[in-house]
Length: 252
Image (tube, rainbow, N blue to C red; front, side, top):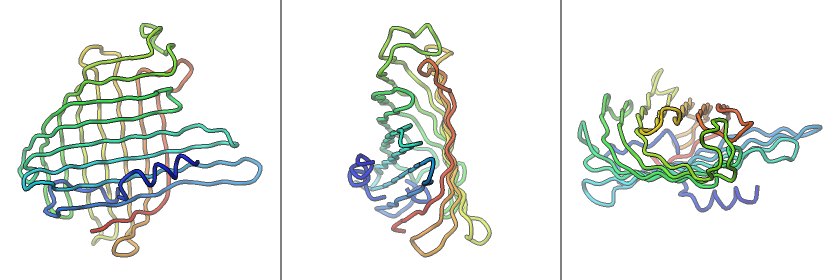
């Protein structure tokens, strides 16, 4: 848990209701904290921090960084300690269609991923573009490098390799909707990432949040995260699900 404190201060103090790069504000930021704690005979700790920062360094450019940290512990035994950093650079995001560059870095304790990095680019399509409600679809391609701490996998063709590199294509869907006279906010972001080289190497992720506004800059949040990876360490499940409850702080 000491690492959590480090991550919290290193990440920008910012994911709320998912910042929108097409917004006219020069700076948008928020911080979401959620988790579960159970003491007694069996101690359970589940903690998730999400940060989201959108900044306009120049007139037509927007830099957006989304970071998350997940920690899980059962019976004082660490189960997860994962970092995910998604970084985007957009050009003319106020348009209906605009290009993007991206760079990702992540780790995953349970999946035995030491470091995973992706670098690429693509294009975003604004399907719905309003101040309070928006929906976007993006297509991108990335070169991925994944270093593992093991070399045995559920798909034996990859055994003996501690590094699996590939070229990927990605389909992104994200959106935000304010419902029931702004008394409920629905936020979602999902992606599907197949390898463009091998059909047995693919993954997907769905992140869904519901927020209930409490104050101007404070919301109560329920978050559901579902992930799948086709290639995992031998003996590991391909799917992970995480349901957490917490609060969101934002500056807008």
